[in-house]
Length: 413
Image (cartoon, rainbow, N blue to C red; front, side, top):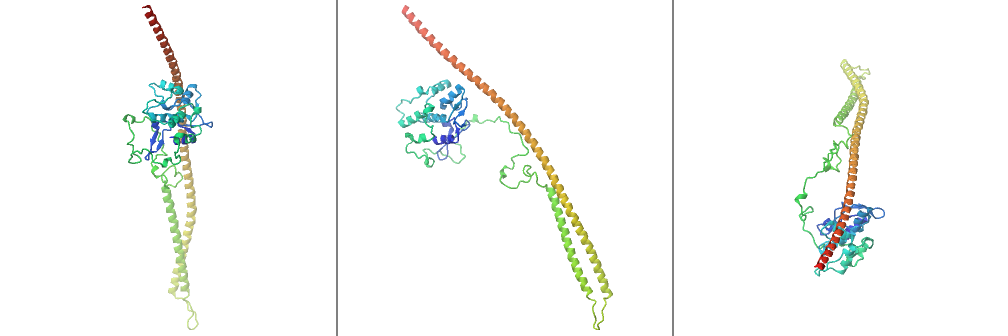
């Protein structure tokens, strides 16, 4: 407990609700401090400011009550050490030191702790003097209370002698709870009346975040997410671009094939031209009419292939600027679409911001109203206490008058 409270103070926070109900046991029997709903951040001077009584009445410290009374509301982490002393007293004696039937009487005993705090005289309680001294050092005025120097004050106390503070979590706990799994709650008493439907209104649905993809956080594929794929290429544009690439590749392949055929035809034409040579008698042999016809056919085919090759090259040159223009148009369209989507998202964010500001104003108004009601309640409480004191004094006077009259009646008789 000392280490747990000290760790909170080291983080510059004060717990303000230390009690046995807020201490849990883990599977190994070591404690876990819980319920940080009343925590406050310490200021630079090591104090917090609050004029509201927080915590459980039996464990609340006198400085918190005093801060509520005078309205200044400043105290420090010493209030947690007071509550620790009350917890220790309860664990050793079975009840809190300032228990009373009414809340007013309990607070009165706490404020008058110098006269009201004492140990039971029952000999059945065997409590060492060191333990009593530790409780006296915790349940006392804040200026004399143990813990002003942190846990070092406890390490130097006689009740913690020979305790291995650094290896305390490695030691065997005196009690180890029986649990079947890390989620076993069989040791908790659950009241059916505590299980009720929450009145909280569900948050406003946001189309940009549906939480459907949360199980896949960490994976890189996010196709279809309007938050991460605003600039991605649509599937129809991707398929169109792929078709154009395949068309260009086919044209280039056709061009290469025609160039190859043209080269072969030229080589064949040269071979045909080589048929007109020189005879055995030295005279030149002219090509036959058949070979001449073949040469003309080859020449026509060469011309046709050359023309087709020029057409393919022209188509290829026209296709490339067209693709470039189409890509530029696509990029411009995507940019415009993304701008529109971003503007829509900005409008949604502005709307959410306005709603949040409205909720903030409503919460501030509600807080002011609650603060006013609290002040009125405190004023009524003070009036009730004054009336109670006045009635008590009046009752005492009436009793004295009654006793005086009774004596006078007896004297006359």
